[in-house]
Amino acid sequence: MSDFSPPRVSTSFERKVGASLCKASELAMSDKLPKFRLVSAPTGGSKTTSSIALLAMLANEDKGFTGGYICRTIEECEYVYRQLKRLVDPSVLVVYTSLHKHKASPVMLMEKKKEHGLEIHDHFDSMDLHKSRLIITTHSRWKKEYEDEVDLGVRKYKGSQRNLMIIDEEPELFSIFPCLPYEVGELVDRLSGLLHQEEVLPKDTKVIHKFTTVLRSHSQRMETITDGSIEKLPTYQWIWWRIMSTKMYLR
Image (cartoon, rainbow, N blue to C red; front, side, top):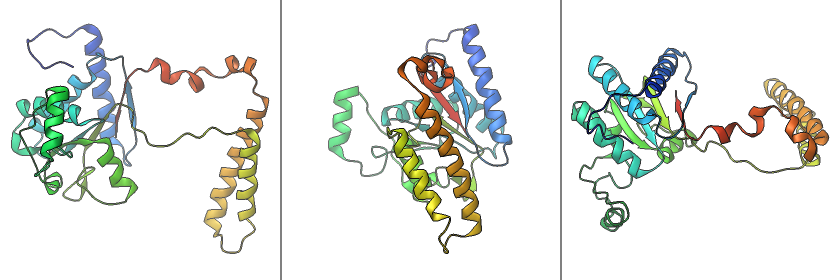
């Protein structure tokens, strides 16, 4: 990560990454319904630096702009906070994690200092998130908000959807469970059985039917896959995550 010191000229590749990030942000902010926009580049490709610069520019040029930066770790939150604090009016910026809250554990603060040389000086209240135009927090708080269906001030500013949310690194939005074709078939049978129950509403029947159709198709395909046929699978299905070393999502 760059700390903007000493100043240097961006490389051609970094400028392309920055342009991609701006385009993805423009699309994300024009979406009628929030959706993910993916920007992928190798580590060191300036995604974080470009994102910080973009948020600062938008916040400084448009006093009505609201945004958020979601990081995987507390250390990353502190880094982004320090950089943004140098570029925007500090009064519009808040960072909130277990170590940035008031009365944070002295023991944990000391441990972070020993492990990473991290010293956290600025502390905030959780309610500050709701009234701050720019916020920085962790994946866990962002996920808790939509999983528990509560407003923690992450996705919304004073009750209204923020203009742009940048989620750094790939968030763990779901769990993957290995299964065999017959197990998928059993799930299809159980779902199909629901169609004959009186308490199932018509709208739910359509969803179940669509879901069972997809599952049955996957089950049949799984039965035809052997070790030798894996190479014939579409590339994106089995190696896409290997060639994307770092990802950034915008919504």
